Image 1: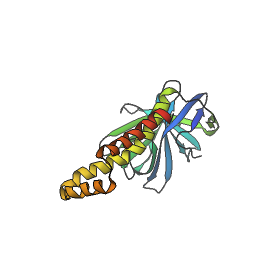
Image 2: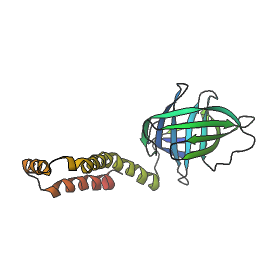
Image 3: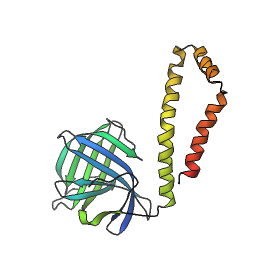
Image 4: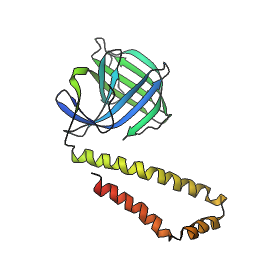
Length: 209
């Protein structure tokens, strides 16, 4: 089952909200989603993905690089990000080399993801699908609300920052008079543009909760 950013899940007896979602494709052509979960009771982060081979969800969290001694390799290859939503620190087309391990009876997992600038290690276990369900009308914690508000702001501000950065990079190549001509045509003081951007940011922070 595919979930969406912002949905809340009940996993066994605990509530989590999806604050991040990543779509991957690997070297075998397999496509899947991984979900960044935040636990309501303590705001800790976990990851969830569907394992077709096991017919169950893999539930995991980041850990140290020490691999348990009883683990055996079960999958490896390269995976590429093809879509992102919400609070994630990867971008589309980012690629990682990965290795998946399980213990002898398949109850515990260990994963290694080698990205361009860092390596992540995760440990986890499998959860039967009947223990994972979407929970409707859930009251979010203040911490989760704040983090979702930040995602909204960055979704709006991010493209503006990118445009301004490119303008600053390439400005020496253009006649500065062009910018003055645009300003004169619009008949807006320079300060108005800044106030409009600031006004939108304040709107999202104060009224989009």
